[in-house]
Every structure is written in structure tokens, then in C-alpha cells.
Length: 79
Picture 1 (cartoon, rainbow, N blue to C red):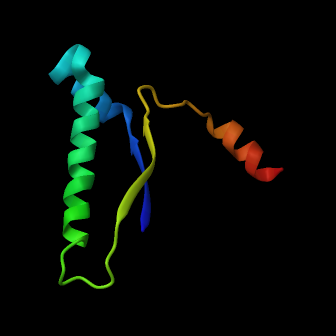
Picture 2 (cartoon, rainbow, N blue to C red; picture 1 turned 90 degrees about the vertical axis):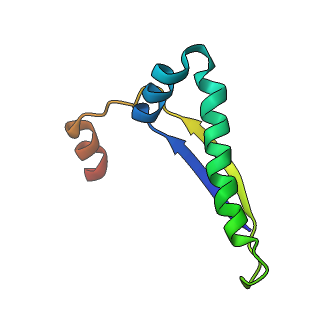
């Protein structure tokens, strides 16, 4: 089993807001599930050995990306 974490960035979220408005959350979820399902189908072919399953263990939509300053990041690394 491959455990997969899916992160959606602000850019894709904004695209879905423009395209789907109030339904953006549901439509984005459907889109991500369809993409992962397509990958899963590829790996469940009988001709592929060993048999692999894909499982989503984390799904996160970053509607606003966190803002970090270089100074904060550099200071944290130097400690």
C-alpha cells in the first residue's frame, strides 16, 4: 500500500473558486479523488507485480499559503 498525502495550493483553489463558486470545495474534492483513482487503476492492473494499493492518508487545501519571512526561516535553521 502506498500512503499518499495530497496538498492543494492556493493557485488551484483560486481556479476552482472562479470556476465553481460556492461548490468549489465539493468540485475540488471530486477532481482530486478522480485523479488519484486514475493512478490507482493503473497500479491495480493484473500485469503489474507486485499489486499496489493507493490510500490517501492526508488531504489538505491551502486556501491561503502561509507567509514566512526569510529571516524567520534562517533564524530557525541556525539554532
